[in-house]
Length: 357
Image (cartoon, rainbow, N blue to C red; front, side, top):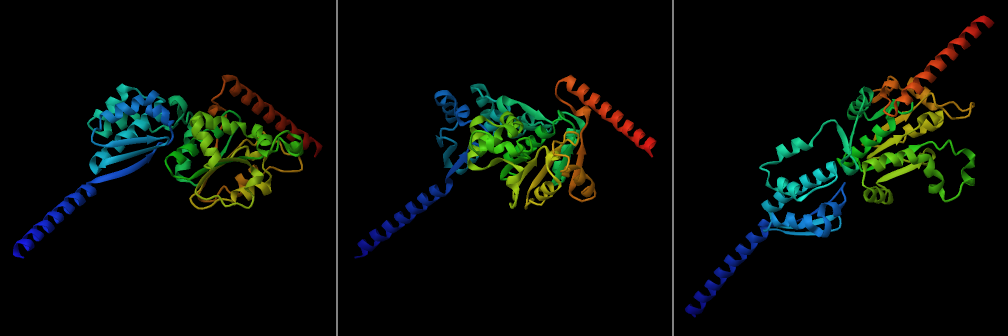
């Protein structure tokens, strides 16, 4: 009986030791899933998974499983965390330069620390890295004021003539906010005043009818996001492009919202839009008060808003001019010519009124 008890005690001790060892191993092992965002996963993995094979060769102690947009990593905590930091650097490089190579992978995997590599990648003036490594920056003084104002205010108005980059800069700010997870979605809207009452006679469903009038917004997004990612965002509602009329009755929370061509919103429409602002939302309103397409009996809401809201805290007005034009040089000359023409016409009209009096 005594021998049996001793053997039983030894068995229990061995069992406890084994359980503790097993428990310790379980505790230091981890499994994490990382979603590949802002880049095409196939570009990261390489043709026939060549890049992925190279990456795996630097981490023989962990298991790396890639399925579409998701990468599962299984291994010891420290190894897994280290791998994720290197993976993020690879994604950052791919996002900013549009491609990676075996040499880039090796440089990132073997660099002593993150700081030097990140320092080379980071450029505080770049708003977003677009397709094929396109660097999208604020190019002019007033565009830079837009960027600064968007960091300090929740609502900004960017008013100026055609070609000054109002819409493009606003979309870049929205994409940056989405990528950095400051907002959950982007909503882009504009009045479809050009379609007028003829909308019902245009072919196609509502989206097909409206798309031509929203094309400038699509063009900007295509510069800034991979086509597959843009398509996915459009399908799941992360990015929404809709006419201004569709904003009525909504509360726009946790979103970066852009109203483009605001000069074509009536006074009631613009007030309706501005009051859609929900919690943790950013609003950018762009427009050109010299290009109002509304009927004469429908005054634009934009000039009224600049007067009514000029002293409201939390709202910033940025006025762009011909110096901000980033299109062909002739566009600047055209803007100046029309500006001179309108100034002369207004002066002549004032003289006529004085003579009549």
